[in-house]
Length: 508
Ligand SMILES: NC(=O)c1ccc[n+]([C@@H]2O[C@H](COP(=O)([O-])OP(=O)(O)OC[C@H]3O[C@@H](n4cnc5c(N)ncnc54)[C@H](OP(=O)(O)O)[C@@H]3O)[C@@H](O)[C@H]2O)c1
Figure 1 (cartoon, rainbow, N blue to C red):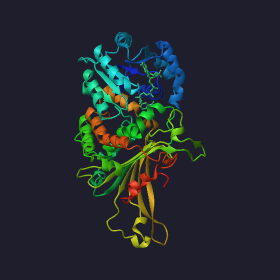
Figure 2: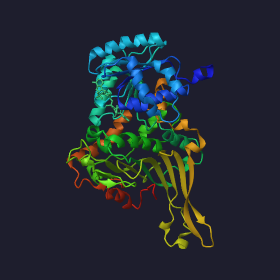
Figure 3: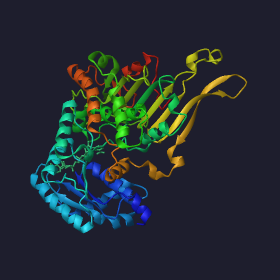
Figure 4: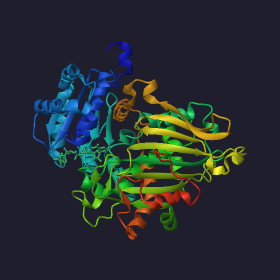
């Protein structure tokens, strides 16, 4: 590595992955580390130690990774590069509940430090079921692995979901804080690592034309959709415990909302940005029981047929799901933000499984022009669509602006047209990685901007807790209430149409 490359590279460290034989590690973390390494964003003194309960040694672990890696990386996999770097991966078997495991880990890490020249800085990545977060953090603390010194740091990355309600999230924060200081804790939401979510900030705060009209005077409503066409796959037991509200809203959707709605921060410092995100989340009108009934919609998919003609079973007929399950696979919410910027502008959030497509987007619907000159030409004002700005998070990351233009010809007809910016047309493909690259790299460099602080997590749960309570007290009737591959239950449409709005469907 030359000097310029060295200065871009993260500092030397060992990345310790708990859950090293699990799905997240194989599908996302190892490919992300490989991408970072091939982009020269990792230093030469770097190592990875995997821990899991499968009995094997480092050599067998390397072989297992080598057999699977190409299928997770896909096109562009460089075998020679992999072979040259796989020696930096180590493995230690152990049970996360066993205190001895952490004593062994401490010794193991000293050996790795000696072999790889790493300085004793450790990043602990908890790619484990959430129930292990507390025990792993406590045991690391007990053996001194959470202690920082002047010449080395210790950080911990915690995956979502962070708690399953307000009490458990607070409890988890308290447990983590017994071993780690807040500045050492990196609560991940890989949505915040996505290029396009970060690009929302660049778009808003890097362009003089955007912010002046980013408010209630010009914006009519905001829609945030995270739709998945897949069902629950082999995650039945996790999903039955979680449901769409816990799985998606409290994490990804509120994260995206906070980026869309926050005030401009004073600087690009982590806490300046996170302070503004928390401020706007705190300004969301809390749900009381009345508002839960009027402004939230839950749904569960029934059987259905995809666009390709494939039939899929109802949620309750999926393997591992009880016949009488009341778990929601769809949620739509209307949120109001009590601030000068957003007074009177509804934010509609929607997420669901088995929707017609897999896509995540933010739609900013602007108000109509104040004087609709073309009303007479078109009979009814509503025939002219409002301007829409669509921020596409996935797939086809990009931004489009929909506006009205005259249809060529002698008659004065106006029609909606679309101006499109596609990320991949402008930047090379490496900019559209999974999001984990950015997050691991940022954590290694000690940049917590894209991670959630303890107070952020608790504000999100405070908002959602009344919904959980009311939904629990009043079990849903009439589930399943939307066919697979549809846009959710009818009520989700009515949530908007009753106020004169409409969801933007990408098929429109
Ligand atoms: N998978 C994803 O794409 C994804 C995406 C976003 C977030 N996440 C989050 O990431 C975390 C990990 O998810 P995952 O899908 O990778 O889970 P996973 O496949 O179940 O991986 C967890 C690993 O930990 C091992 N393990 C369980 N109990 C253990 C113990 N007592 N001692 C040692 N090892 C133990 C498991 O072994 P066994 O298999 O033998 O149980 C498994 O290899 C979860 O919090 C999840 O919500 C995952």
